[in-house]
Amino acid sequence: MRVLCGTDIIEIERIKKSIEHSGDRFTNLVYTPAEKEYCESRKAAKYYHYAGRFAAKEAIFKAVSALLKNKFDISWHNAQVINDENGNPSVEFIGISFDNIKNIDISISHCHEYAVATVVITVD
Image (cartoon, rainbow, N blue to C red):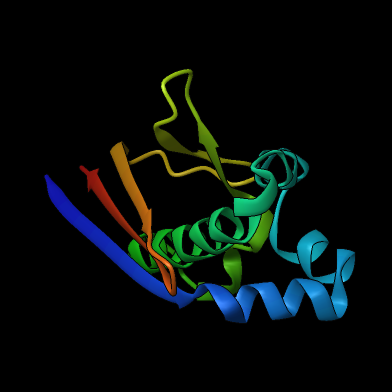
């Protein structure tokens, strides 16, 4: 068994400015429709959640990069962060598969200025 990990931190204001400046162009590039729906449902806190998902995707990319022949084999829409009924985040891969991943755990957190995410993957 092998353990892979990735972590990322992002300024919430940077994501807020990107969304306010380019709107749907940015959100459509980075987020899946389900992710956008979730973030928009958070009303006043939506930028915290957009930033958290951005950091999560970057952390996912860092963790799975060891499993890819080319780091560009995965795109923003290939990794989707969803929440279960208890609000816990999890990762779904769309249009890409990793047969050797046995488990993937993700944690997302944010404060006033930053969002951070960590991903831990176990593989055979």
